[in-house]
Amino acid sequence: MIILILGTGLFLSCTFGQTANFSILQMPREGFWKLGLMNHSTETITTSLAVKFMLEGRLVHTVSGPSVLLHPGSNLIDLQRMEGGTQLGNGLTLTTSAAEQQRLEICVELYMKGAKFLSQCDLFQQALNIPLHLVYPFDQDVLETSLPMMSWSIPSPVSHPSQLRYRLRLVEVLGYHTPQSAMANAPALIDRADLTQNVIPYSPSYRKLEAGHTYAWQVEAYDGSGFVGRSELWSFRLKAEKETTDSNAPFVELRKRLDSGFYPARGQVRFKHDCQYGESTLDFVVTNHRGEQIRTSGKQLEKVGKNLFTLHLPPGSGLIEGQMYHLEVTNPKGESTILKFKYFYPKS
Image (tube, rainbow, N blue to C red; front, top):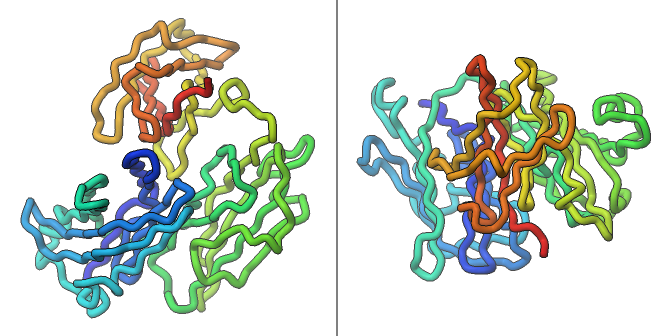
């Protein structure tokens, strides 16, 4: 029996026409054969789904669903209920050798009206430890809904998977507090230790989230043997009623490695970069999710303060609205930092 896992930081966004806009939140793995998809539209959409296991171009196994309803927000799709899914529950042996296991791929395909509009393949990896990570709302995100769907990854391995429970804490970040100090000292708006699912809606029974206010959240996991792990601490803000996010977007710090969050870039990316080597210009590149470079120029980058920069990305820059991109900045020592962002056209 092999453990198959794809990093839970994958967010592939795909737009079809004017209504369908999806992101992959979480890939299935052995013992948790469920696919997490986010429907960013306000409509329930019917699609066809195929999940294929591939080895060097050879199809090993397929799980398919001819009619899958994707409701607005997060959707957790149980592959074992689909055609070909019973083999997964019975311990499907996908490969026979360790060398083959390292080359195994999973491909997710979505179809609408017979046309394929999402296709993404990634290598599976044998993993001994899968940490607990937050998935949505994204770190430093600005939300337009006061009832967000909240989700996080499932840690593995655990001693007693059937006894896995989560504790979710959410606090308001007030005054001089940082998200860290608020989590340590502020009273909790949510403090639930009885959760069995890793995707829950923000219930209307909870205290109402206020426009313009900032909140921090964190999740802990427990099983029958006790504490399993604790997620990173993220924050989000509920959009103010008259807010224009173009100029008020926060300056975000680039990181040495990607995580499961992304920056919403409405016509621009506002970021911090420590010019510790005295560089007067920045060496940067923008790529799409396939690694293809987007043509940019230094004229698009504006220094707006000490170690603060704005990368202007107006319509016509070669970026597609709703798609994910990477901004990578390299210093004179060859050290790189990176930011994942989702592109939106600026408001007119």
